[in-house]
Image 1: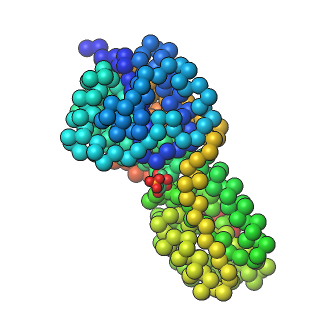
Image 2: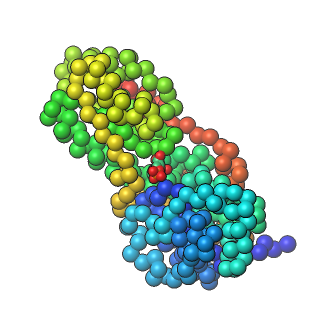
Image 3: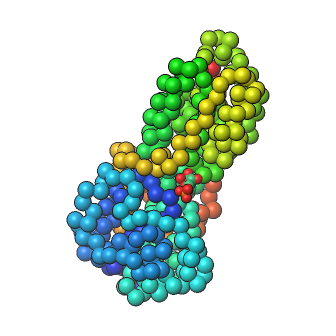
Length: 326
Ligand code: F6P
């Protein structure tokens, strides 16, 4: 039996925003319109779906956005949608608007919502968009590269002042429960120590002894990158370092600056490819899939399977950094 084609689709962004989401929206909209589909842009994630807050998008609705951070569709985390009743309400809204398929751009929470909606009868395709790169089924998530580069530039600036004052700069980066951001930023900035949730910190050996040792070889300033939620965060860690070593430490929490800014080339290209593939899947009548990067290539896998997968930070990279940051 031929699969039913999706002629009217919706697109939404949900969860934390990420640079490159706009490039993905652009690809979804343009590719769908080219295939003769109608596209609704749904505002503020699943909240907009529940409220019917959506608009008909044309090819010019997505002009001048490929280089812009944030999301023109706005985003939210919807508590109301995350209930069986919420999912049924969303399904009814799709019926009312004639939406036969949905592209949802976001993180794990977004995909859980998409899975539930699929089970309720609305085919959904997920696109991984989060600066954290913590979607297990994909090697890469839209926004990661931009956030890393933003953070790297900030840490470079902190290095200047840490050097002038012979200080230790303790920088807290985002990442939710994962150390992908901290690890890559730490390596790129030559951090003396990188503190990630995946590995318990040996404060004496990895920080105190290392600072004293490197000091004895002439080092006078230090960068330490800590993932949010680890070691009590940058403030606690900086205080502890000063108490243990006598070296003046300053804490900086980079915060939401990491989520903004114009997406890098990698994020724009990946977002474009992912958006295009998502529409191809819906056009073919396929739902309940996440578009992912696997072995460096764009492909897709089942949402449920994807949500059950796990991935790890690159411990070899962490060990290498520990060895050469001396
Ligand atoms: O998932 C992206 C992220 O920026 C995480 O790194 C961070 O833990 C969280 O979102 C912050 O969320 P909020 O914007 O709600 O403060």
